[in-house]
Amino acid sequence: MKLKKTLLMLTSLVLALSLSGCAGGSGAADAGKAKGDDFTVGFDANFPPYGYKDKSGEYVGFDLDLAAEVAKRNGWKLQKRAIDWDSKDMELKSGTIDCIWNGFTMNGREKQYTFSKPYVDNSIVFVTKAGSGIKSLADLKDKTVLVQVDSSGLAALQDKENTDLVSSFKEMTQVPDYNNAFMTLEAGAADAVAVDIGVADYQLSQRGKDKFEIMDPPFHTEQYGIGFKKGNQALRDQVQKTLDEMKKDGTFLKIAKKYKLETSIVAK
Image (cartoon, rainbow, N blue to C red; front, side, top):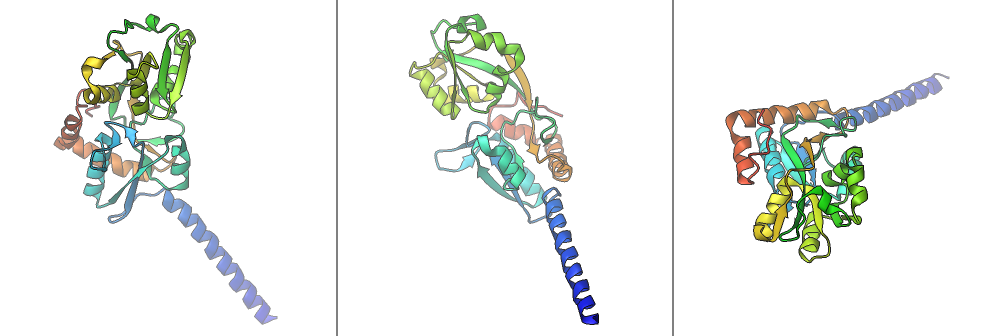
């Protein structure tokens, strides 16, 4: 009888420790990081100047440079993970990435993630071919407009305030990435691209500013933030503290100037 009781107690203890370990594992995923830990950033590799692959095959960009400096100052090992933008929520919830850091719009997503402070004021604009004669929103009537799937531009066009505008288009087509969109626009197979102003400026600098026109004023404004798993306040605060320090010592502005984004950043 005593042996049975002892075995029962041991079994109960092992079960309790097992459950405790599971709980601890779950909690660890929502905790801060220690020196030497990996810091894995999820990003869209086709979203220059925020995240993209350069000619040498290296992943670079404004957001990735910021992340690298944050990791360096905290003693973390930066892991750059190029993700399918459609799968970003699954990657974050599974713990494959620690945050979404890549021109990530906060507006309308505040309840889905734990966000950093906004660090970029972004505008959404329409880009057309030079000489197209498309100068205003009214000129987009019966035109084909491109936008990247699950992007800030798409979210803006799906906003209720732009219902009438979208209904005036001949067609609104979602494309995999903005490189595809600009090639299609340049080839004359579409009339306009709805895109973030920073991305538009970069694409024009690479493809020739004389080939395209950016419609003014922007038709939508928003802010970018770093998205962490909902409730992961500890990691968010570690990253935010470091970003605040980078703003104070001028490093943040220096990186922004490297990518010609100094007029878009939130300084404080």
